[in-house]
Image 1 (cartoon, rainbow, N blue to C red):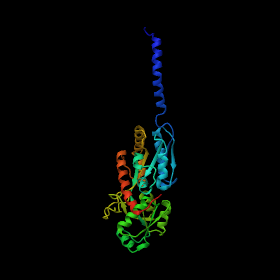
Image 2 (spheres, rainbow, N blue to C red):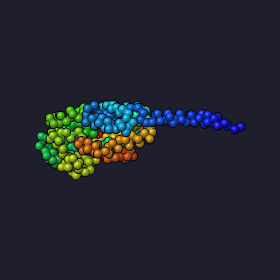
Image 3 (cartoon, rainbow, N blue to C red):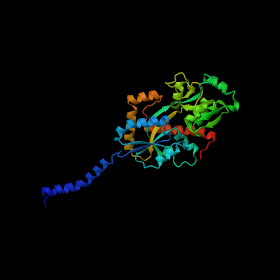
Image 4 (tube, rainbow, N blue to C red):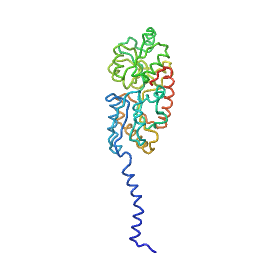
Length: 328
């Protein structure tokens, strides 16, 4: 029996309908098709939060003009922000802006419900700034050598500030004190501002702090930088030596931020998000913004980020265990 032309067309249309429906559904649900949430452990209004909000304004056109919402979850050494992403679907709609706190968490939280290395997938690097040894501008020591000589005269009176127990400033402060043989007391604060204010007021003697947060005070002459933790001198403070130059090893970990999603997020989504973030970071506009903020950026692959993450988790873990500090 031969098919009539009109019957053939009807059958072809019927057979094609399901495929057309699937393709139409895929087009309608192409990522992203709804707002994205960017979770950060920083408090609303601090330097990192403000930079994130500005960056997301420029990122919006590359992500189908979807709303990009900042969700501030400060506290618990970043664990609160990490858990928000872990508890969200692995679909790329919940993105974490992480920092070095995520590499420290496994060593100080014994009951951590997730494994950062296993449960988070790197997407794109955001930026970094070295950690510096800072003292009040009124301090008589002008160089690291002079400061060390002064510190040795303080005995058990010497202390250092941090932005909280288990933070980078805590662990680096401990590392420096131990390496120099200084019996310095750790004084934790709830955030950057109170720690720096008390240091400038002379209530604490020094702090190990990222230069991104020190920049404003350095430019105004309110604090003095004596050494930086990185392999080469920092381009914005060329007069300040590195710990490596001064003969001290183990100061190659810097302050950084990077974008992560839950492991299991589709590779196509990760690639699209990474491309959008890296493309914006590579623009002359954002190169100029970073110049003004003393922030450094280079494109980094997810694989390179993962390797660096694993290395820092092990390195910070070794120091955290020496402090004996446990968060839970």
